[in-house]
Image (tube, helix red, strand yellow):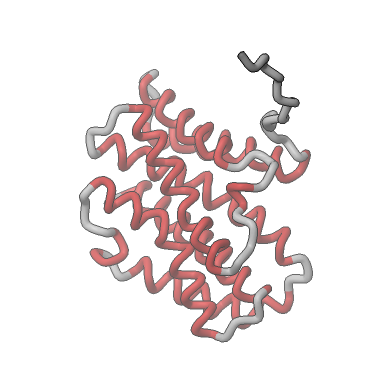
Length: 210
């Protein structure tokens, strides 16, 4: 990867690694635990993406990504005590990560020849899988399963990117637009509790027995 795509990928990995390390700090893990959580969160979504696309797994082909994860883990280990409201920081850092990875996953899907709807799905999977691993390993309710908008924000960002490209926008502009829309929708979920309507059960109907 080259240019803005590589930088966007590194940004997503770094931010997701930070969220993994923040959860490790809340669980009072040791330094090895910090490294594991940062790495699993930072590279988990991209690994799934590359396996599905049958392309070389990015962090195996380029050691910078694992180095970023471990560096972030050490940094958070040394400084996490400074942050008083770590869960709030986790939410907003995660919002940045999913917005970046939504665009990144969609772009790589398009490069692999996937149809636009499939590229959007790849963006969603890339952006959410690492956080899902993080939350499951730490026995926390996954953010993707919380009431406020999460996966919808990722789909909005990836969809905006794909649509912008189909309308002839330059890739950097489309990436900024996709990132901004994904982040704005997720910010609404965090700040204002935006959510989609949930299923409401209704009493069953009685049918005559013949």
